[in-house]
Image 1 (tube, each protein chain N blue to C red):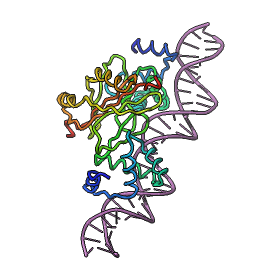
Image 2 (image 1 turned 90 degrees about the vertical axis):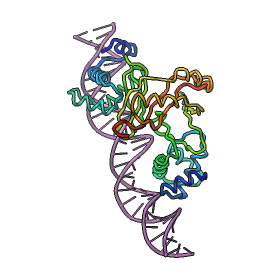
Image 3 (image 1 turned 180 degrees about the vertical axis):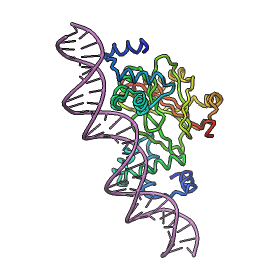
Image 4 (image 1 turned 45 degrees about the vertical axis):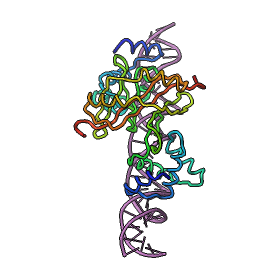
Length: 138
Length: 138
DNA sequence: ATGGTAAATGCATATCGATTGCAGTTAGGA
DNA sequence: TCCTAACTGCAATCGATATGCATTTACCAT
């Protein structure tokens, strides 16, 4: 368990419970964003069954602390990925099979300034996803 | 009602029913993406009450025909905007009050080629939203 | 015009993802 | 080791969206 995560938890007055630890390990071992239901299913298989509600509550808390990113792929459910040790990036998803692939790029650093000037908003974040057809489905 | 919409409906074997017509008028009169519930509420006020289910079914159909765009702002519900007569664009939403503002820009034309080369996907679309704090809420 | 038919609608009900209330449990500092 | 705030599980609930089915409606061919 990375020290930076432990520190953030402590700073937020959060405890490192067994269910929480198991959940964080699942998240860290997942190379792509996963849903709450998937986290729950993997914990069940791995003999660390915790309640789905606990998964949701922890994901919400981790998001508030900035430790996980929500990824909205318009599937009717959210996905989450840990932030620690990973570059800021985006995703592409196949409209056929649902395959998700990381895109190790972000063209929006400069654009953010422009948006702030245009709108007078203080930009805090952005969501960027691509959709298309993977080699197998196209 | 724009001819291009009528043509698309006809091409898809769809009828121009009274509920559908009223719904399309609401969508066209909305400058920003709106939710199914909002469409339903406005129709109710405007003495054209139609069932919420009909709103959902029509939005799904219009999306399949490519006449409306879904806009996912991570609110737990989708928003929709008509496509006809509007430039491709994106949105910024305030994390405080929910205010949505159009961004008349898209930096992704070139990037799409790069993504296609990197992933071998056939890119069909993308979603880009900004989040931040509007002048009132910041 | 009118009649036949595929498409569309409304109502009731169901599903799915996510949230809340509450009583009992646990981590971790004093 | 004890005390308390944080956490958990279970049940119930919610909000958004989908489905089954009987009835109605638009539109094309007569």
